[in-house]
Length: 147
Image (cartoon, rainbow, N blue to C red; front, side):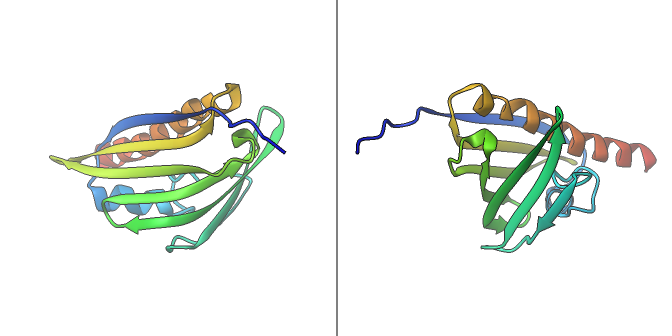
């Protein structure tokens, strides 16, 4: 049986966050912390260790979206890398990589997501990750105002 190769895309999204890389890193992996991609979802199980697994369920547009993955790199405070599988990846195992680059009193947070299907569902990840990066930036913007 011959199967056609699925055309894939890669996304890169950046945000400057008003916090130091260790703080931003810690918020990202803590599901109890506002700004974390796992905060406020319907259900989250997160094991933030190398080879640890995560599952989270998000309700969006009247649909339950289950996401699964495995942490491959946790290099605090520089880099996180994990797999990412959901209905929106069409079952492809995609990779998410975050880098935390110190810039003065801020962090340049760069998210790369590759091996996404080159279709509407794959491209919608840019909107979703944009929402998440805005949430973490907003969390630190609020903290900076309080100090």
